[in-house]
Image 1 (cartoon, protein in one colour):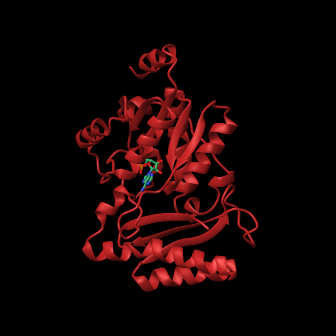
Image 2: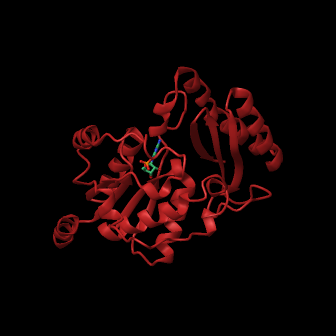
Length: 271
Ligand code: AMP
């Protein structure tokens, strides 16, 4: 059903943009769709909660599925031409036996805590990009490591698609918008707002010349003091490769993941 529509757009000479999502759309998603319209022409949005990127004990079953309101929000935005919301068996038919292994930007950070994650992201990313074959696909910088992994995968597979990053949209207190924020109770929500502030403070120290390792450790301690139960990492990395760095000679990115109760939050910023 998808391909003939895309083919029609192509025949009409339209430029095509694609925005993959897991649904439960918020302003961050809609901003990507808006940018896609600006840079694309015809815009396809996919909504698919990808089982392969969730590990055992993660929130696949409870992940919010809100297709009707998502459809309304996209209609209201006026920036989407098509929603592709396949069922699981359409994407992974019985007997599905292909996996992807990604290194490079996939190594470390999220992979240390969610080892299944980027294999799942790469396979669904590849499948959706091949299904739509857009000129440009938009991914949020909110999932910065994912953006780099997809960009690498698309280049490695020779997919003729520009992989573009969109800015992180935030709540009033700076908390990065995320479907998972809905899991937070009022008390946890207050704590969550500290994540971006701790990263900002760390950036200020880095710019002042403080040592990278020291800043990372101080930020982890600050997150625990602010009420986070577990801090998976705070890391300052090369912004293009995500390798560790010793100084700020090249563009750098600070990335963090931490848990409050059962909710795991991630955030990142340019240094
Ligand atoms: P998800 O539905 O969480 O898989 O996200 C779909 C796309 O939206 C991904 O490319 C995300 O990086 C992006 N995204 C999620 N949250 C935000 C946000 N707060 N600001 C900008 N983009 C976002």
